[in-house]
Image (cartoon, rainbow, N blue to C red; front, side, top):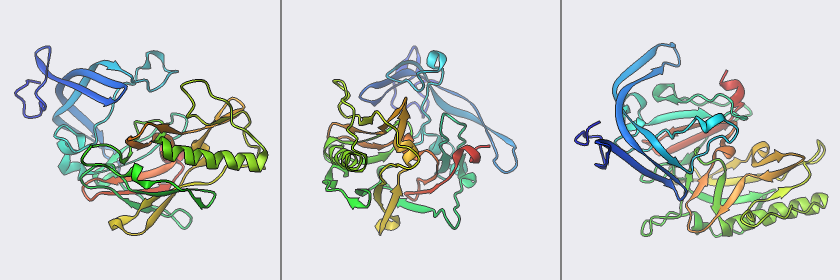
Amino acid sequence: MSVDDPLCFPRLTYEGSCGVDITYSSSQHTVGFVGRDNAYFQEAKTGEVVGFGGFSFGCALKNDGFEFDKNMRDNVIIGIFGLALGPRSFLSQLGTETNGRFSYCLAPDRGLSTMYFGDDAQISGDATREVQTIAMNKMLKYHIYVKGISVNGIRLSIDLSVFEFDPIRNNNGFFVDSAAPYTLIPKSAYNTLKAAVVMYFREKYGWQPLPMPRGEESNLCYATYPSDVQGFPSVIFHFTGIRQEGEINWIMNNNYLFTKINEGFCMTILSLDEPGPSLFGAHQQINFKILFDVVNGLLSFVPQNCQEASL
């Protein structure tokens, strides 16, 4: 793609072509070029393959800090699908087809997960699985409003200002991010959550957390996994509901909030230095059908067996 192309923004150059130089997080950086090609997608209802010509995409040639799967040979899956609303975003380039809507259902154990866009992006529940809708900040895509965190029905004493976006300093906030493996929250909020979980296991089973090596102090791990007659504490994130009214309770799935490691387990919520931003990561989204209506600023979710849903 030429640097004179309207989608070459910002106008960076890489070996004579339109370039891309993006820092995704403090440790992730990618450099490459921007090209155009045909993009093909399958209609969910008819199975028909539909092509779109002149689709703009980035081709990363130098990547630092990206490691999607340590067990995969040569880490061959390298890439992030752009779903913001910038001019080169997939949602923007195919805006008339997507209408700013997409859905996914993250399957466990690296199972197959399919994304749906536009009219194919649907969500439904049943008598035991209610679809709930959270309000997103329309100016800050994928930012949702935290109203509290509870452990076993007890609301934690957390200063919620650590989750509020600061428009002056352009930091803080709480964003849904499926590219982040685990949920990250500021250290002050994490320490309160960690203390409540530690108290649960100490009072319930007399367990003490494992000492962690230097640099991993924020991890919470135990040497013993609960038996069938034991259990984990209930952890709920409370969010602002639709139209900024009410409160939506997202009950964490304990199978992925606490991940088994050898004979023990670790909590998959980690701390980060303030001011953040906080990220609601992929592990906390596993086995939930999630629908984003970016144009209207809505996130809907419902518990679902994503392994079966992808078959």
